[in-house]
Image 1 (cartoon, rainbow, N blue to C red):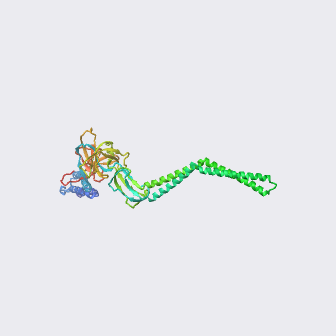
Image 2 (image 1 turned 90 degrees about the vertical axis):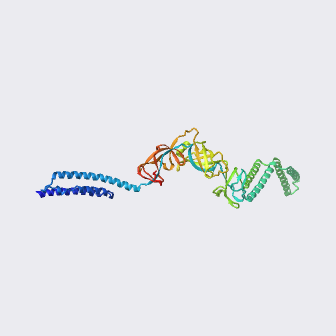
Image 3 (image 1 turned 135 degrees about the horizontal axis):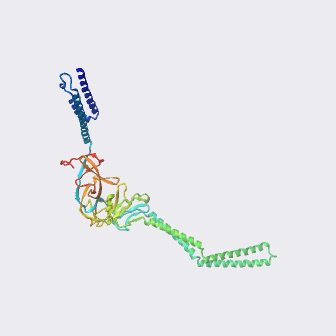
Length: 489
């Protein structure tokens, strides 16, 4: 009977070991990082082994109490093992994430005194009026009396083209006009007095010849029976020819006295106008061999040299570029969020990189009627109110658009412009919460010195992340970069 009890105790121990071994095997299937938890659980199971000294001298263990105690210890070990496993898993995930989490720069949100301007941006100086002058006719440049940088007045000669061909055409058209005019004047004034008297004399002679022919014919008719028939027919023919001659000269004299027909006069007048148009065209080409300045200003660029052939239809750029440097403007871009605070006529302060100590006054003179979709900006121009000779087109400049004099001054919160991102029209930053990046929506204000005013969404003392080109997600674990002085931002 004793061996049977001992065998049952041994079986119970074996089942306990198998159960714990099964639990250990299940835990071993977890990632390698759970090894610490599995070892701890194995030690607890080993501690549950019964000491043989607890067996009674008679070989009969206290079976009921020992089984109960064994079951309680087994359940407690399993529960403790699961807790250890969860804690080990958490530590492992933190350890694994620490090596992959990105390093980021941070900045502390502090309050600053409100600036006197609503926008601080950069742009370029440009002439308010730029004129490009091109040749109107093809030709060869034979003279360039100006150089780049010269001050020129309206009408000054910029270049001359070879005019020999065009001058010949002008002379030819002038001769054609003179011929057309002479023909018209001849028709308009009618026949001369000498021509009329000549026609009258010819008519009188023809009438005399007609009278002689008629007299001869009457005589022939009287002597018809005594003269040959052929002679009589000749007399009749002479009288008919004389009568026709008189009629012809009478019509000619009538035409000379009445003058030319109105249709011929109209045709002659049209020929005169045609000759005038051809002459004007030839003179236009000849006059445009001299290229003149259309406005007063400074010659910024000349793109041709003497001896170079030019053709207006094939030129890709301007031959001359003239700018009025007395009217200068600064061209800037305004972000969409800043445009509600900008209006035409608003005062500005302008400085240039070349002369930072010289501050110019200006005013907003133009706002583009549409935005740039790709860049999300609206173009604006600021007029210089006191330009001088130190300013030149394409200079880099800094423009600060001032607030109205009635605007109240107060302290504001500002964050670096690089920390702000936009998505679907919403501005936001990432705030550091321990080691977690939390997305925070904001309402922005003015931009000053690469910093943006925060009207809502942040509080003084918040730590804002500077992504620096990284793509962060809400709730992502990050590691603040440590500065050389040992302070974490």
